[in-house]
Image 1 (cartoon, one colour):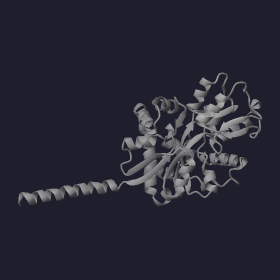
Image 2 (cartoon, rainbow, N blue to C red):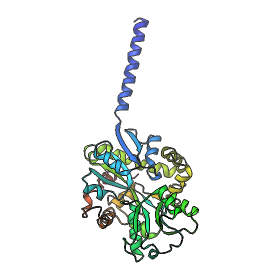
Image 3 (cartoon, helix red, strand yellow):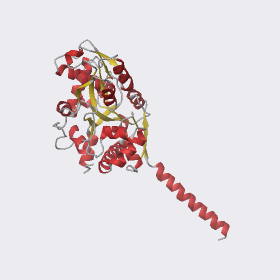
Image 4 (spheres, rainbow, N blue to C red):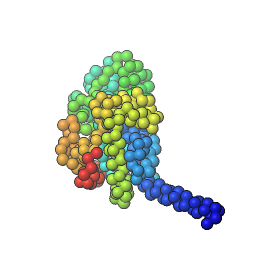
Length: 351
């Protein structure tokens, strides 16, 4: 064989090897995931950065408006959405092809109802304006707190102002109180003399009822038509959480870089030591989330009950009926799917 033929043969061999590599890369299943800027969703960045899902090509994009994300699911352009855990009853009534498949994390002090000067009780708020994300957990949080403290949930005017705008409204006196998540609550308390905390989500009542939480949603198409990919996606998330618990310092930096946040703000929300108890957000591991779903034996933390996902659905749905966001309470199975947890648990996976 001449040198020319040897070179040609070598070139063919190299091309075949490269082609084989390309085929292997292309064989990874695409999964399109979205969430807004929030450390509780940053575990997707860890899964990507640390290669914890070699069979998946995870494309995570930041979309600040959850409604845009859910509409993209309906259009077949997204597979997974990480968002707050109150949306599903609304989505079901609108016919969106999406299910809540997991509780992701629980507010452990990061959410606060902050009042301006002179507001000390629920009665002091009567007839005044409160800033919340209308149609979000913040509105339910404030409404439940009012009723707990002897005031009708509609004794205040809810204004749809959030984050920086709510901070500015509080400082300027435009609203009497606001529901904040970190770092906005702490910043308001520092900047507004005489402001105070009326309620915060670390109180046992809120923890036990799991009121203020984040969830992970999947499209019906991913769950039913690409179930193996759905299971791998869920496993990747819990593998990332397990990795973070063992490597919180490096993990927090990955999340900060991925989310475009400061490391200090990430640590303020999810803590520094990986326990979930030294920050403002408690992250559920696989077993805890599976227990909350009723797909594994045992009880989740904070005196929650096995299978409490159904109770959370009914609680949220009842409030959306009161706020005229939906017409009636639908059965939980119309918007919740805990079967992925069950399949993983039955396979021997424990996170």
